[in-house]
Length: 382
Ligand code: TRP
Image (cartoon, rainbow, N blue to C red; front, side, top):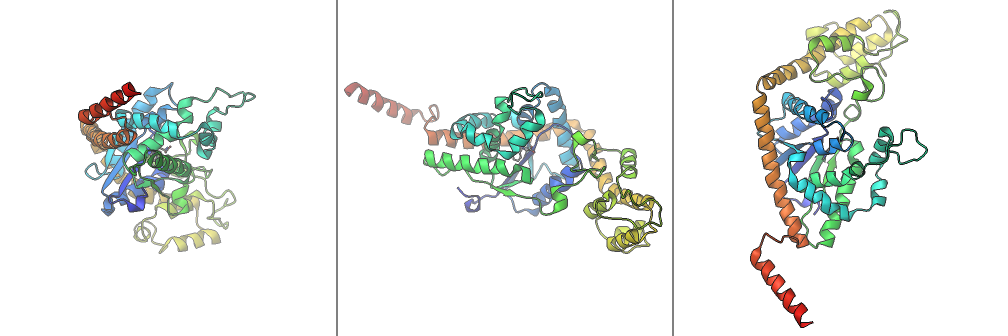
């Protein structure tokens, strides 16, 4: 079934709990999720804490995954994910996902999985390259290799029509569409939905650079501002931000391109009233940029302004987080309730899947008995 033909619009999205979330996650997905959640345009929203998937390359460190489940849940709640509107659920506690993964394994070839560009580049990164002459080589774990199948189970089990995700997830969605299509064709029931990906809208959402100006903000590069960073840490990070190495004296003309202070202002400035409040000598960002390019505007002044802008965003998130941290029991209950709902939804899909495959042996005693009876009689006659 095509997503556009579905009566209900359902969002499924998720994260691997391998670390706390940072501003890259915020501009790249969290902010959008909150907007989608509050748009009222979706019948159901599920946010999956994909701990099973995280284990496919962290099997030797389940504690890291376990500890980050609560971190990620706190990050969600603190940015405005509302448990009354979005169900936060834990992958490993949803048994239907495991069963579906197992059936879907039959609908995909290892050759097809080997062509997945995201898996390929992740394999390289993790030393699962499968090349005998690679010093790093440690073999390719089957669990890691097949995680796109498990992700297909995540998506289809919820009958998701819409998966908001980054470009790196496109091959995963394509894989999910293929498996759903194959399933519907082979078992002659149009039950699985071919999901649509919802990509980030602009360049900043796609890729927020780190505070060092390099590539992407990422935990492994150590260039992140975390949503949970305290004011002192944020101040230090902003003050050490990469700007323009050619802008040595205040009077020198400066460059705003590739200058993180301006990149972050582009991403995080809420409106021009922040100038009136914190930097009244400029009316807007355009004026500030022009002054910087002309020369005479110092980095320190710019950074102080950026810090104010960042704090306007981060302080409420921090306060919200502190509230939840003081009531961890509530967070537990939210995860439990979200997961319970997810279990019900996905069990429904699993039941339909087994029915389509006619492996629903214990769901309908009468039909099965009649079936078996006639089978036994037929074979006796033969
Ligand atoms: N693979 C995603 C990531 O690395 C996480 C994820 C797991 C996911 N299951 C999902 C994303 C289902 C979207 C839908 O970020």
